[in-house]
Image 1 (cartoon, rainbow, N blue to C red):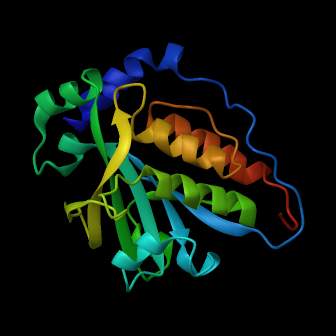
Image 2: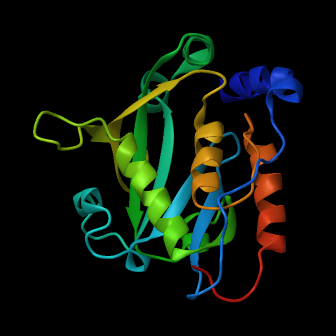
Length: 216
């Protein structure tokens, strides 16, 4: 089923994936922070270390009180939460625009250890870039009348949860294009790729060519 969705994306990736656009400019002043891109094969997520943030920068992270790191993923609301989504939900998610969810996972051990079966790429960002990234994530929460995130249930693994998102999911706005957009907001030069392998390729290059020194 996941292979089917990947094949659908690959079929049109040659015309749909853009070259890496200019990222927001990074200048030098303070020590860089590190975020992590995690590839789960067909799906990607971003990991943020909470100690890199001001204490009030991400109030919603308090819903994972024991976390030192949080992985953020995004996807189709019905497909992402289904125990056994099947080919029909894959096709529906791809071709019928629908609601989306955020998937947040909290953990305490090093990222590479927690995701030992996945590819993990460390990416340096500035304080300003990290702040933009967290603001983008916070803006993605659907909220109730009191302004609280709307939790839908427990997540897929570990200490995790699903939250309603304000964005619409479709083939050209999938988990990988969402992740790519978030990385560009943080100042990392990647293209708007439909598939995880292409996004990972860009991220590897970005990690290898990142300037050393201090960031602002």
